[in-house]
Length: 76
Image (cartoon, rainbow, N blue to C red; front, side, top):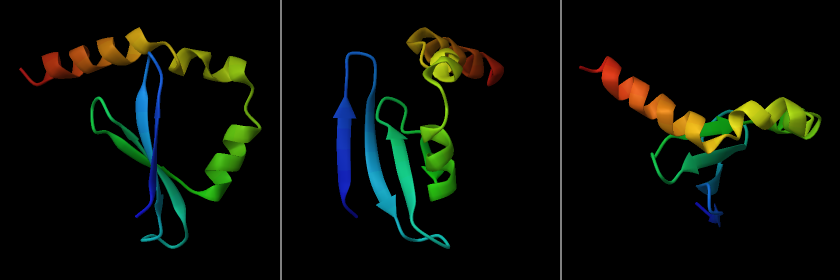
């Protein structure tokens, strides 16, 4: 399966094309955690129509790191 890795000072993701579902999907893997999510063409089109302001809350790196710590605390 072809893949592309994108990196910045805040994130590293791997993009793959998944043809195993009912149609092609874009797989995105967070290289730090291994977490994977898949997006079909409709979901990707919705992302194109989303304003950057609507994504700001998701793009705060510390939010993801603290979320990981909170999940770890729940396991104990």
